[in-house]
Image 1 (tube, each protein chain N blue to C red):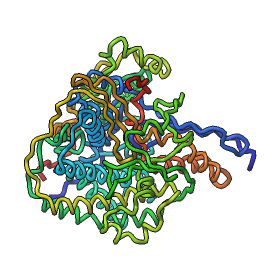
Image 2 (image 1 turned 60 degrees about the horizontal axis):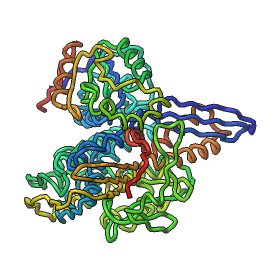
Image 3 (image 1 turned 135 degrees about the vertical axis):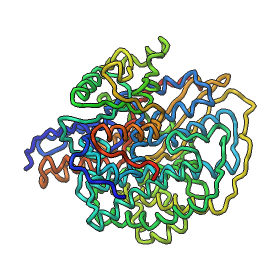
Image 4 (image 1 turned 180 degrees about the vertical axis):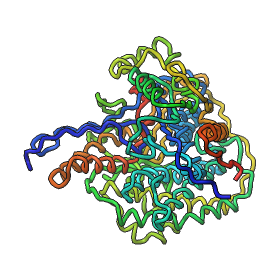
Length: 431
Length: 170
């Protein structure tokens, strides 16, 4: 079997966000080359940012990606606020925390239930789930409910779950006006579904152990998707503002997206990295209900990214119930800036990992913008994992089986191709 | 009253071109709400977000999201048109070209910066909305698409193909 020569060519990978393909070249039983090709055409948002008024930039860059739009709103708004020296109120910080919690629940639910769950049940689509089969019917109903409630939370806080309406530079233009009791009840009602999903994933999903460097934001005191320092699994701490000094971009000629390395090596961002680095900071109720599950972290199994996403959903539910139960939101003015120029950086954890924005503002308008998205950072690691998976299975699986396993692996990364393309490395010449 | 079960469902294809796929995300939100009603009426024969298998040679309805930025996309859109009875443009980029078409208005300096990418991946001379290339039967505008207009248009399509509309007030 060691003389296997094979060319795998996947034209269009399904059940991910956006268009991507793959080429794998195997010669004499060894993987010679893996090319994960981001095929989405660029829309050149990096160039398009120049000249935009700072206050409208977030709604512009929100259109980079439908599913992560609210993450782009949060990160770009933070970068502008940092550039203009704006410090938002504690209430605005809580509202933004609820907004990202809602995004995590809805976006992870989209990935886990609609993209990945059919793989577990060996079906092509959630639409094919058999309503007369009790287990399939249960998970079908769980899928619809959990996803809807993540959506409801974002609508409640920010007016819309895609391209949210109420977040703005300096705070929010509106606060939630209705009583949160029914929303809290709904959040409570989906806890059991999420725990069921965690247990199913652990029991049924395949494994691929392949250690890499895990990188995530870590809150200074509590779990945070929005603030803190960047921590690596090599125990280094990097300030948000120093991001670009540590992570180097790599041009990948066959891909429409830019790849990234850390100290010359590939790394991984996303839920698995966050769990590996921050599992001690999860909400106490989440921790109490998942004692055995959390003993599996830190993990070097890339498929545990699915489990990590599901755990984050539970954390986001518990954190949101707490905030909504204990906060009375009051009308307040947005914080204004007295300056109209500056350079600012915003780094947050988007559903798929670190999202970096840098803006340079002169006379109230953006002169230059720079964005680094999670899927670009994961691109090289995805290729390495595919190479490992192919070599591990080359002697026991046929080509179609290997191709299906590769698709599952790519789906486990939850790549967002709309985000990953549409950028072009711009020479940053403003100090 | 329970909706009837149909012997013939409408064959639907979902396609995306250059865009942020926000209308696809709105579609998955609506799919959650109307899952069982749609399942009785719609056969999703090609929808990359929902399934791997692609078996269709013909569509009753093709929903097309996104603007057209490359020659290869022009050919693909024409092929979809030839396979479909109805084409529905969903979202702002498909209906108007914007915001995917920002490069059309770039300054010469901005155009110079992106030129090597346009050449490397064979981009078209400019970004086009879809009705600059094929006939479009229905438009669902909005960024993301307006879900009320989408649901109303889908009900019109159900009626056009001899199916009962979905009760949107439930």
